[in-house]
Amino acid sequence: MRTPLLALALAVTAASASPLSKRNLSLQPAGTTTPPSQDPFYQAPNGFQRADNGQVFKARPVWTPFDSEASAAYQVLYKTTLATGEDAVTAATLYAPLKPASPPRIMVLAAPIDSACRDCEVTYALQNGGGSNATDFILSAVAIDIFAGLYKGWYVAVPDHEGPKAAYIAGVQEAFGVIDGLRAMLNFPNILPKTDGYKAVLHGYSGGAHASAWANQFLSTYGKGLNVVAAAYGGTPVDSFSTLDLLNGSPGAYLAWGALTGLANAYPELDDFFKRELFPNGTAALKAARSLCNTQLAPVLYNQSFYSFFRYGRQTLNMSTAAKYTNLGLLGNPVKQDISPAATTDGVVHIPTFMYHSITDNIVSYKPVPAYVKSQCDRGAKILFESAPGFNHTVAAVVWTADTYNYLESAFNGTLKLDQCNQTLGVSTQPGTPEYIAAIGPSAWNLIKGAM
Image (cartoon, rainbow, N blue to C red; front, top):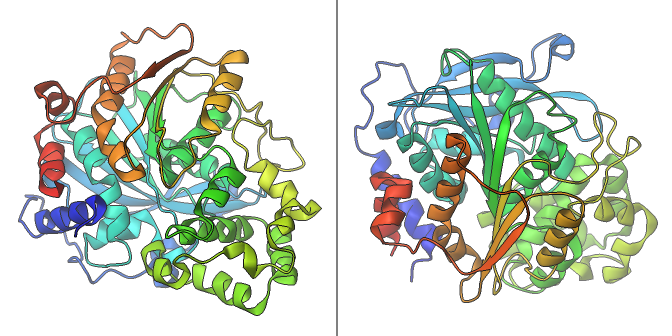
């Protein structure tokens, strides 16, 4: 039996075999690209520390499975910042639509990379075009959104927001990678010739929602001066412990263990702490998470209790060093200078935001989300929050797709009216209806149909 994500991966891979592009570029064929850890393109140039965040150092045109809706696609290497404040570089894939809206409309799409391994980045997955079983998951997870955004005439930036250390679920790192990914788009005229009057939005689902939500709350500080007019994300991990507890001992245990490994990648102090507290099987699991993409890690950790990897079990995460970083992982909490030297945040989103989440989500806990939304609204945020029961985590991503694009379109058009928080039960635009198809375009809809 095919899962929806597997079916989408197969559909995208099949599409990638078609001669979609008319561009005369010297490109690597699918399946022969070099992993980021071995590719010189991903290495920082000498003196990069002197550059502004978002400056593009390297660029190369790439072939991806979305050429039917794109006039050009490039990989770029750009300046960003690590969660611990040091200068760094990371990459993004930038797309230009066939018929760009004017003034420019930009969607920064955060993918659910969900891996603590350097060779599982979304740029590699997109360039591979379905050529690697390890990264097909990521390709399928962004396919609908790339097609939909390009169809609507939007420029699309898909950053490697985890940064060079593969800091999966490290919110500060993800925020910086997303925000500087937008700056890279604005600094790269090969894709975006003119930036006058541009508007931008943030979007992501699941692990991508985590990155988008963290970027959203850093916009007023680290992202100051950028014209981001709205954000939309769903299946958002807002509380580390709730999702860790949900996944522990389940088929999705690999996702949570990857997240703990990603945090250790971001913060050397936490990495040293974990190494002291792990049993040998935990040390082996940490090594595996750093060398395998999430779909490869899944059979290794299937149904395992990762708390049992630690000498003191779950209590380990309440110990002072671990608690410092698990508390940092609570979305909406203020982040101060001692934790984030590059920028601070009050933890509040200051732009209109659409959130959605299935009440019966089996991967990312729904339980803490309403309290997070209420806290945001009490502090002045403007959030439209939609929820409904009956959908698993993967299906919910597809169910709310049209509502997401209608919301973002209204923000671009200047017709979005969200003067205060609003919560609704249900989905406004039902999948398969003419309104749903019109919101995302035929290419995205054909992918969804192919996965049914």
